[in-house]
Length: 314
Image (cartoon, rainbow, N blue to C red; front, side, top):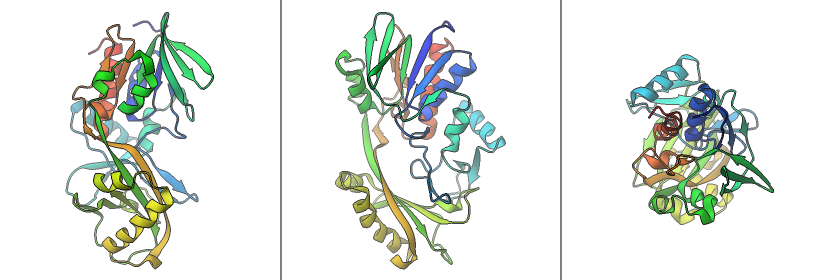
């Protein structure tokens, strides 16, 4: 792998940033493109009015492999992450002061173009043409770390990876964010009930370094999310908020603010079951949590594995 080669990474979620981090640390030239306003993908944090904060995507992360455990320990030591006592009795970690801190840690000093949508990736004479709006840039290697169904559209007529990608399945997730007046005795820190319309409820403000506002996050079950996926955010919030109030044993008078977010490709339900896919020339790669499972560590492992393959370390 020549340091003169240029690499494009499409997607600034945890997989894309993990790949970019290792390649950059090895001295390779790369650029990251992401259509969102902020890096992190589903490791997302929303700030409202400068003080109300919600982790409205991934709620926490775990570390099982030695490689990711090492990364997690480094994030803990530098204050980018902390252990969250969520009542489960398990070692669950969160970014501090928000889950998007993980993206800031991995993306430090990288060239990341936010609010930049790549519309197509096409074979070119000496690599790959990346269409960004009306402009086109050429790269020697392209790494795509967006959800699998979006990769199929991005590669278009080239048909690369289509057979494998079509077997990957996703569940959507509708998420409610609610700021409440202080509760005297919240009934729980987190609550999981896969049979309930609100499959996950968390006192988001119980996480370390979160401030004083009482912020709660509720995530709907896959079935409920599928049913109402095409509703607008106001309608979704209006349906989910009474359910949250019921589960917390409060009235709507306790609610100060509420909104909702739709995650169309929230959780992989049928993973690829290998860390990544690539073409025979090893100039086009695709990866993400959809390769290994619905865990933040799976996204990191996929991206890091791609980088190691490019560097010849696999």
